[in-house]
Image 1 (cartoon, rainbow, N blue to C red):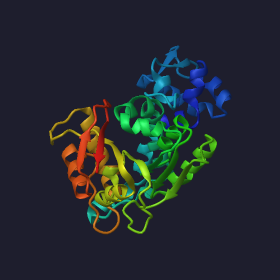
Image 2 (image 1 turned 120 degrees about the vertical axis):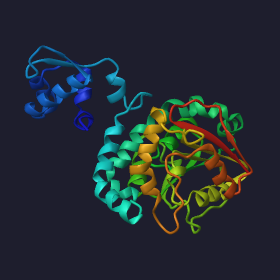
Image 3 (image 1 turned 90 degrees about the vertical axis):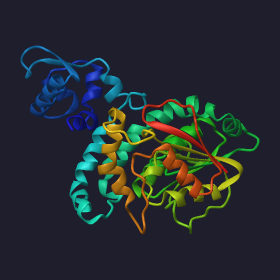
Image 4 (image 1 turned 90 degrees about the horizontal axis):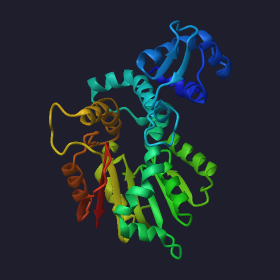
Length: 336
């Protein structure tokens, strides 16, 4: 939690510009020196900053090696600044979570507050910027060729689009694409629309609030590609969401699912990644999936066999695990 002021008040970014004493950083940021003294001391003791001097009140502090990539470079592959927001969001929802354990009810995503959206977009955006076009799409040569077709521009559906960064990066890479982003969270869609305007792609990228399990939404066959990025495991009704995506595909089109790299079988104790995924499921993913009538959420530990079973129930012919390396995500190609 000590990272929240460092990120939101710009302390890390200021230290990246040059070392400072607490008094100097107070002047540079317009914040209270006494608080900054305490924060800088905590950063140095935790190893995130280096202190030059024995008195924390007047020592000069600089970012430790590697911390710029973790806390400042927002689109860099090592950025983890969003983790502090997700922790704050989970803490804010804690009273509802405690009650949900007693009642079995769900905790809606909106109950986690705007920090939830900030955290998730910050954690996922670097992958979209650095890897989506450069690393993931080359593993789908037929899809890549279709996206490159300027004479007959492809249409892409970004289902569970969140704050829209995957759509925006696709639109920037392929200036002729038409993209529709759908998500049930109003705050996420509001941000996605704003970001699309800021990045100059709002003329080709639209975002709408929609429940992907809702039969009344327009699922007319129109997409050459539908993507689900780190969201199927969260859905209260994942089978319906996948089935609606299948209905919305043109003949021969593709669904790409990017979801958690859970171990293929239950193993306890697990490695660091599995421990993180399992813990996140308890306070984040499962509660958000237990919403609405007859929910069937998977939780964060979505194993390949589980995804295959969901896809089969949704009417897909085959599920292929793609050879894309990522520490947290696994990549699936669903064919009709």
